[in-house]
Structure formats: structure tokens, C-alpha cells
Length: 508
Image (tube, rainbow, N blue to C red):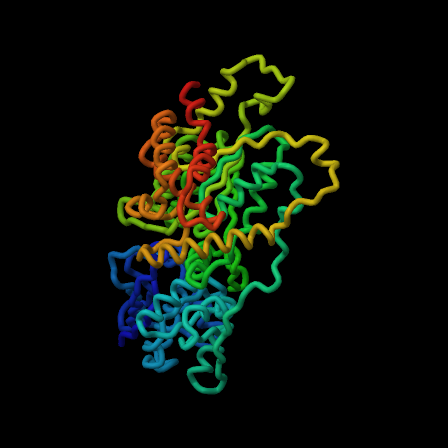
């Protein structure tokens, strides 16, 4: 007899249906799993055997063959335990096989028959819903699965016995409820920042338009403190963005107790991070930091300390909004629409340009340190600002700075203007930084004085085509913050001032 159970394999954030076929027949006593299983799947036969025994069932003295179809698709992870166990139970008549026809199944089995949470339940639930099926998953992952569809049939048992009793009608399982993380800790507030008015202005512009930001300044000037307060002025995730972010976090196993959060991600990897850690990869092609920051902020502190090849690997995700991981036998794409914020010292010793400081290596110290970051990488950063050291007068002064709530209100209004503009243009993006080149000159058309000014400035600063469009996008954001329909000369001048280091860098 052959029984069938539906489960999924993951390719990026997509859940691909997998047919678990279980055959129990005559022959040498054995338990064989075929269909390109990895080590975790191959070991599931021992977990299934022990879990069935703990649940009061014994495998028959026959040959058990499990086929995971399609056979040429690699199968990875421990979530195949439960579908294999249910397939065996259906094949030996312990549960009716037709009860499983309407469900996709995933879950890891303990040796005592309990179900442990697994990664990827949310994308699996989305995939099962697309197939018109319900979902069977561990109890700890039920709240995560419930976000897929409020009408979807979801079973979240604690153990194999509880699920079998549900099918027998002796113990009915209720549908799990979707859960959010309740009352998360308060975010750091901009009111705590003293001085640094230019940096605060740049932070507001970056938040309003989703622009990339680079801060350069001596140690202790507050670069990391400013970056950590960016999430406090960003708008909350929309429902669609929430699902996208949560699906990636689910695949990475980072959803605590299956609870989702509407806060934008803020990731800050150490500068020793490898290319696989930042972009994604490994044996299972897992998402990296750039994908875990999707719809949020990726903060790179001590930027020149990163491996230059690792930094340059970010150029494609910054441009396309996707992280593509190519392997010999498969190709995986993860979404990576991020806002990059970076911080760096002006030189190796960290105090170049400060009054009274003289470096023994002179200008060479600055040049060698800053050129560790390539020009093409910097060309993808819209705002580059100097963050000077804070004076004692700034710290002692009693005046309190503007709080994050006031700044967030202006950011939200600017983003509302942008969303309406893109909706009218029929463009699928939400911020000026994401706007395609085909609409940049339409949405950011300057007046006559501004156009003449921009032409002269582009020639003197030798802007690339990408740099030219990024200046227009930044000027459009500045106009949105001012509530202006037309991009003026003052907006272009301020936008160009944030790229002023290009000329000095080329001279160096």
C-alpha cells in the first residue's frame, strides 16, 4: 500500500510542494528514504521509529520505503519528520489516509513523540494556502502559520498522539491565533542626541526617502548613536511588508515563539562578517544579513574594516533589491530592499582634520584608509556627511533636542506624498530611493534655474549617470519634506552638498 502526504521544500522564500510517498510491503526489513535527502532528512527514520514506538505504534516487520518527490529536488531540514511519520501511520492503517489529503504537513519529531518548532512555517503556510490546503505544524509555530489566511484550516498539535486523537474525534484541536510581540521595548529617542544638527537633518532626509547614508567622523562623535535612533523615526511596516519580513525571519528561525513584529528590522553585523554571512549562502543557501534587513536598516559600523570584496558584493543588492545566491545545482533569490547606513572614521588613527591633531603619516593615512571603500560602492550612497566631535558646550547645554515623535510625523507625511505620487504614476515602489530611472526625471523635474544649476554642478563634480539620478531623487525628497510640488534650486543645492566628498576623493 502507498500513502501520500504533502509537505514543502524551500527555494528562497518560495515553498515548493513535495509529495511524500510511503510504501510498506514485503521484503527485507528496512526503512529507506530516497529523493535526494540531506543528512537531517536521512536521520529522520530514527526519530520517526522512536516517536511511533513512544506513541504506542510499532513499525511492521516489512520493508518501508519513503520517496520524496520530485526526486531531483534537494530536500533539506528536519521538517520532513512529521509528514513521514503520518505517511507511515496511514500506510499501516493507524489513521485514515483521506484525512491527510487536505493538508500540507511539516514538523520535527522528538523521540517521545512531541513536536518541536521548525523554520519556515510562515512561507509553508502561504504555499499551502496557495494550493488550497490547510496546514499541520507544531504547536509552537501555530501562531506564525495563522497569519497566512484567517480562513485557513490549521492544526497545531503538541504531539503525535494528540494529532491522532484529533483525527479519531476523541480530542479536537482548536485553530491557533495569530500573535504579535506585545509591548516591545521602547526605541532609543533622538531627544537624547545633543548637538549634531547636520547629522540629525541628514537622518530625517534618509528616513523620509529611504536613502542610503554614510557618516564620517572621529571616534566618540555619535555616529553609532545616531544610526541606532533611525528606526524610531521610520514608519511601521505595512501588512504586506510585515509578511515579507516575517517570511525571511521564519526561514532563518528568528521568529520567537511564532510572534511577528511590525517594527522594521535593524541589523548591525560585525566587520568580520564573511560574504556568506552578509549576502547569504552556506550548504542550505540561508538568507544573509542583507535579506534579514529587508524593508529595514542595515548598519555597517567601521565601514573600511570590512573586507573590500564583501562590501562590493553589496552593490548588486543595493541596486536591484535582491540577493541572488547561485550554486552549481540551484539558484536562490531572497528579497533585499534595504536602507544602508554606514559609519567610518576619517583615517586609521581616527582624528584627521581635528584642530590641533597632526598625524605622522600625513595625508597618506587618510587616503589609504578611505580608499578601502570602492568608488562604485560609494556611488550608491546618496548622503555622505561629516560628523564632527561634540563639544563640551553641547553636552552641558540644558536645551533638549526635538524628540523622535515629531521627526517621525514629518517623515510619515513625506512618505504619504511619495506613495500617492507613485500610485498616480503606476509605479510599484514606496519611496523616492526605490524609484526606477524611467520616472526619476518626470517626478523630480526641476525648474529652469534649478536645471541650469544642476547642469553646471554635474559637470564640475563629474557625476555619473547613477549619481545624477540619485541627486534628483534626494532633491525630490527634500521638496517633499518642504511640501513643494516642484524641485527648486535650493533643494538641488542641498542634495549636491551631500555628495561634496566626491571631488576631494578623486583628487586624493
